[in-house]
Amino acid sequence: MVDEAYKKAFRTALQARMKKLFTTHLVIYLVVNIIWLVINYMIVMPANPNLPIWQPWYPPIGWGICIVIHYVTYVSGGESLIMEVEAEAER
Figure 1: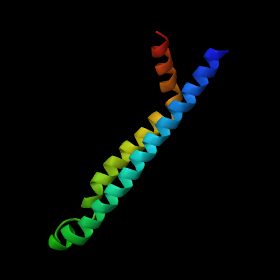
Figure 2 (figure 1 turned 60 degrees about the horizontal axis):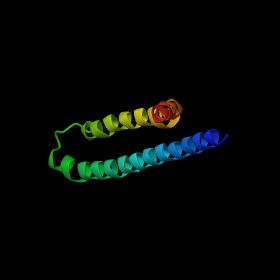
Figure 3 (figure 1 turned 120 degrees about the horizontal axis):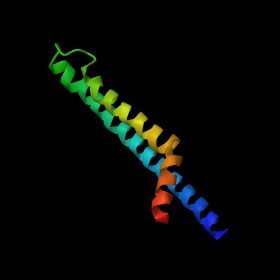
Figure 4 (figure 1 turned 30 degrees about the vertical axis):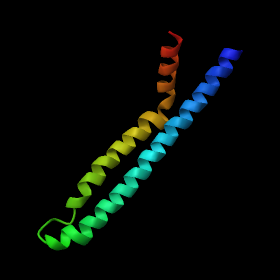
């Protein structure tokens, strides 16, 4: 009984930590990319009018794909990772 209560508490704590890390990653992504786009559209693009308008969007799109992978792996699919950590801890 105590073992099951411990496992449940461990799972809850680990899920909360995974969600917190994802939220931190998402906030950093938003802040950095807003600054990136503002700098590009206010400074870089006027200085170089021959640059394509879509060019500054490559880094946010690439990082956005990584954000989606982070969410799918650790937040929505985190249960399997938690089971792996529990199995490793029991050894």
